[in-house]
Length: 346
Image (cartoon, rainbow, N blue to C red; front, side, top):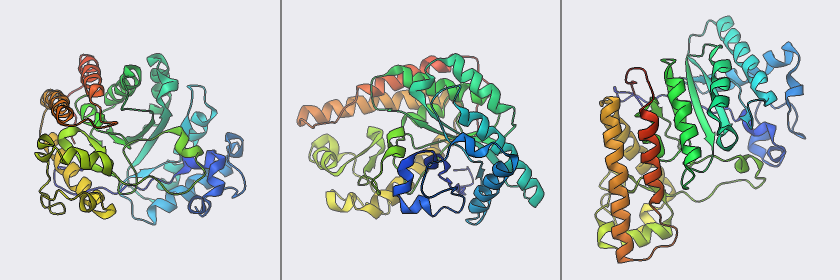
């Protein structure tokens, strides 16, 4: 989301799903025009020949161009180690995608997608090794979709993700983070430029999602910016039943100050409300320096913990937690001390 309030459209081609056999049970993915086989998952061995690499790159780019995407993504898969064979395959696919765009004389920016299982990249030396390899492709920017649980007390996951963003920030290229909760606001203070606001996905990404054979997702949750997260309708109802929770009633165009759980958690309302509020939130961060963003994020995590403590004093609510906010703050403050480039632009 830019300062001029113009949104940029990014279409995820979902190539990462094709490396998991579960995709064969999902009609939506089987209909993708660049699927090699509807009966089996693809492997790096399917892309040994330059002609196969070029064909996949062409198919993925054409798919995104058909939706008039503002930013294009080269084919990318989920990485489970620094030695994952998909890394070399995807590097070659990026180069092929770039060549295809040059052939079309299309100047749309081509971003390098980084989809990795953060639990397998907790060693920062391996992150350095991966980025050194990928950055040689000289992409116009980076699109991050990191598999992990960012609502736990596992500080190593947060640290590895923050370190990744920090290292990429030295490239001076735009860094977009996607499918991530409000830990992303802290990432804006250390080098990330944009948070992708998705109308069809949640705030998390895990490898198990790719292995899941059943179609469809969980019910949409409602975003409460003061509490730094999305909450299901049961927790939402409990929160709004407290005096403290009532202070977080939203007066956006769609919620209009309502306390009615059914209205707020309605599928369309959750999407429109989330987009509206998150867009405003990002705009507020965009005018701040990195130091100001850091202070704003730190204050937000402190307040969120305080608010939830007050709510829990009034009512015991299952699965309403706040201790991870302290970990968010601690990690972002620690990583921010690393030597970094100038403040990024949102």
